[in-house]
Image 1 (cartoon, helix red, strand yellow):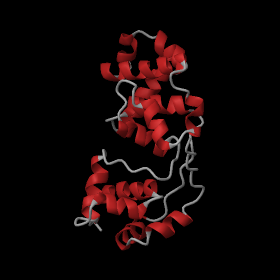
Image 2 (image 1 turned 90 degrees about the vertical axis):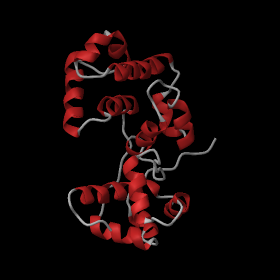
Image 3 (image 1 turned 135 degrees about the vertical axis):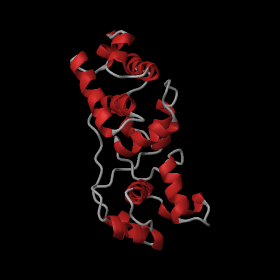
Image 4 (image 1 turned 60 degrees about the vertical axis):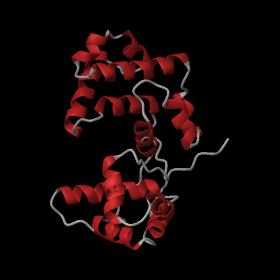
Length: 207
């Protein structure tokens, strides 16, 4: 089994690698240093929170999670499976999200997914473990790899903002060539693209 790549404790080596790309060097100079990501201590809870907050603003996602916690007392596989669907719907979850969070809970309860040992798996093995769950697509797992497991070499081509950023920065280069240039630090590159995209949306001139 392939060993998982360790989270980055600092970005010095990653930044030195990424600035070999002159365009990315300009992005990094504009955005500044980003904080290092750290793995979550609760992969199950983090995935539940990620699902409940998808396609919502940060404020709305936090509000729904707070209502869910207030309603259930504790968010775990038992409380999620014991709760009627109407109760979960009542805190603001769509029926599709109700189905997904209960499927995640059932997978943990049955042992179909060993959440406590996901961090020992490589990226593709984590994707293979989670993607069979209803409502969990590759994009969701890639976000989980980035922000829950702090994997350093993930880039989601399923993310519209990342695709747009890639095309904007390197319009005449094949995406796989650019991603090969940024590897093995594609997660940090993705975070810089998101940050640069946010500046552009706020009215800043794109790099």
